[in-house]
Length: 121
Image (cartoon, rainbow, N blue to C red; front, side, top):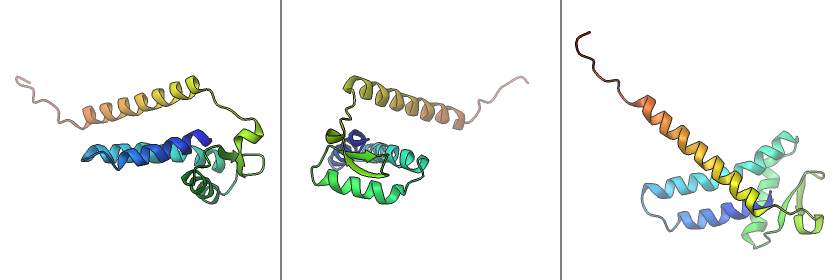
């Protein structure tokens, strides 16, 4: 889960350059990326707040290969552990997730719209 934290850092940096309401959406996307390691740690029964905090600090310092060592329940160097992620697979997962979120928002907007007034009934 090192790539999500690294992407989150860069998306956060991008959010600082985006103006208006769009910056809120970019910040929310960065936060969503940070939630992925949190869910994995929580499901493993580990202290996600502590580990994600450590991981975020390490990524801020430029140690981009640091990720979750689920066996230890802490932070580990993914390069040393031999853990690599496929770029194409990760890109596909993120695009699918973003498209699903966009579709949910669109459906939610449609449901919120006031119903049409029908005549003759």
